[in-house]
Image 1 (cartoon, rainbow, N blue to C red):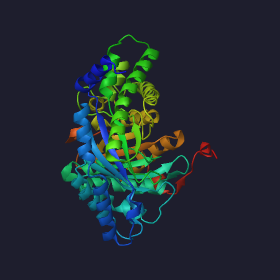
Image 2: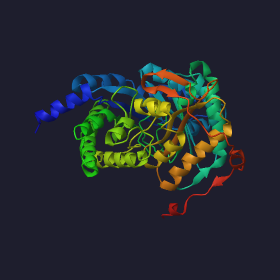
Image 3: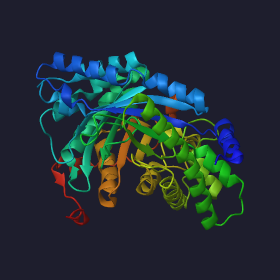
Image 4: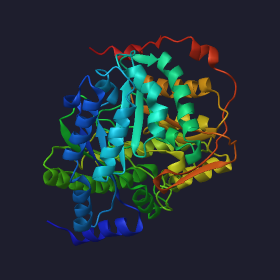
Length: 451
């Protein structure tokens, strides 16, 4: 039975507390587009994307109008291009161009899947794709890229870590005229998932259906507003408030996902119930932690409060949806969260503290701006550290780090919109080069032997 109070509460969440659907993402398999002729394969890629996603934006806008629920982004993810390009034996940049043109043709905001999975080594096509990432991101507007360099089952590919340190730096250098934005569209994963609807790390896994709809919700502002009503609640009550609020947020995501699935005629996949912040006032994960009792995000107690938040979000959301997946937790992207930006600028939030926080939340060191003179091997070591957290804890972790070419600590990069602005954060310049250059494979932990 429809409850009038619930309807009014949802309207208030949307109007006053920044509740939105962050993205509906259509996953499209490109396995049937493989061809030894790269031009033929690219033509197939363009045609399949535009055919499958031709109504995605329109139907998303129709749902927005019908239910009054903002859907901020409409996106596409595709099969990792390294798999598709392996048959061609040449630079896969043409695939990035075809993806970009297809995304523009159907009107989506971003398209992910310019990706390679190299957690245990490089197969045909992987090295070519990785080496082409800086050029591909520089010559396209909507294409996002990701590389998975480790997993709990396989360990960490240290050779891939080394390469990715250089690739991240080159992606920033090639887009220096655009605030180094190429690096903001590149994610390095450990334990990457196949059904992630969020960019820049989304790709369509080989185990997924031919075409599918996944939804990513938001709602940090809603959680903070709910907690503000109970300033004297104890921790158990705080957990229950977050769980109840997460349930309501996720129900909205389920509604949008099922409706979009029915109207597009493709299967409904998952709701990713992550709390995804924005630079907008009142839509910050950091501010939730401060509402719980921290003077500022980054101080002692931050990891504990974030663990509490992440756990309660999952427990509340999982009961509200037929299928939960993706990354599902609390995101802490520095440049995309107003509270994180303030904490980083004040010096309260450091990269080392962020690394500790990633052990208990989704998804990793995200949208962090560092000085432009950061050595490649230092980037590689940051990637290896974060991958180790993911590998040992059997969770997805990632690094999206942006070297601000020509800038130093205390300056900032400003992209506007959802990407926000990032203060250049302090790094440790002591070298890890000898470790990174040893190469090889960091072995999987003992608890990976579960069969």
